[in-house]
Length: 367
Length: 191
Image (cartoon, rainbow over all chains, first blue to last red):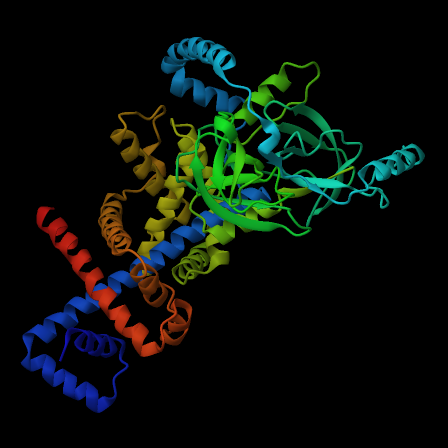
């Protein structure tokens, strides 16, 4: 009897799947052959171990899912510490380090940023294709019409039915109060902007645009919008690692589309250090899509691809979102935007992660 | 008496892996543990880790068929979490910032020792499965963990028939057992 058939017999014996006479025969064999007997004992133990392992794994992932669910529904205190408690906690933990770190950081930032400004080459943008989609070629005409409608319906608050939106991209929520982020080129020269997903359709306005970093911050400006309780994902301040698996959700069509790939280079088009290169299937309309890593942290915003190639795209690194928010804070009566830095999606499987993220990604429609 | 009965009901639900029950226990106790951890040098991430580990300790206990906690569920989870957190703080050379009233906890050292031993075994199994590589990893997970039947597996993995898939499964299983037992025996002989 070869190993495989013996193992099969042992397993069927343990699981009680043998016919009575086969079972009798096997029990005799077990008595006469100590090796077989030992194998039965060993395999029983092993199967038990596997079974327990399976249950354990299942239970642990159930716990993680439940945590996210409850945090989302607001039934347990949000995972993020708030206000005073957080300050005290951080202060207690890091007071010794913070002073030194801060002084080093200031010096390095100054040196590096001045170097970057001096050295960075101006890149030819012509080969770079921004992935906002054109809904039609009648852009100009419709814009004039829209202006007309605009004038007539000046006071309307809900999304008017008859604005012909001409271009579009994707955007995603960064603050539960209703702030979104997308690419600056998606909303450039916009008259009217609306966002849409399964949750609904809302009017938004541009709060801030940074053409250099290609980041725009939008605010939902619509009475029908109900703020979220919390966000499932966080934004990473770190530069992503080479070969790190990533995924994205975006609106290249009127339907949300999932795509996955990996980080293929730490710099973007023509060595651009603001962005990075990702191996992913991106199409027009994907501009502004969040790029998430395995832990469910946003590591970038998809913003374009090279015109003469297919299969890879570029993404603005998410740490620049923090920079933009900082810049924004310096402005007068700027809104307070709080970006979540911690992801609740760590450890969930991909379909669960996508299901959670989906509600926070919107199609951005511009006219 | 009534509340005791109720708790036994909860524990039975937990043992059966009833999602509603797990969610209920989670909802009722997480905030308490979170404030324990956060007030003692921990972050909310730590709280999530520790609470979930305490839930695993409880789950393992009820899976073994023992529903006798000798105290309220609340006290049990609190005691286990506290113990786990103290251990972790000691590992990182940090200390509790406030003394915890010993009356509110029960001794759980033994349970945590069993839990750690079992955790180490699961870790071994997990590593052994990782080292197997594909397609063995997915094949065995499909059969032994997700309990799929051989026909479906053959279809999903592109084997010509169930017998073929079964042979492949046993080949993988023999390799996995070798990986697991070599580590397992090493581990037990050292410790």
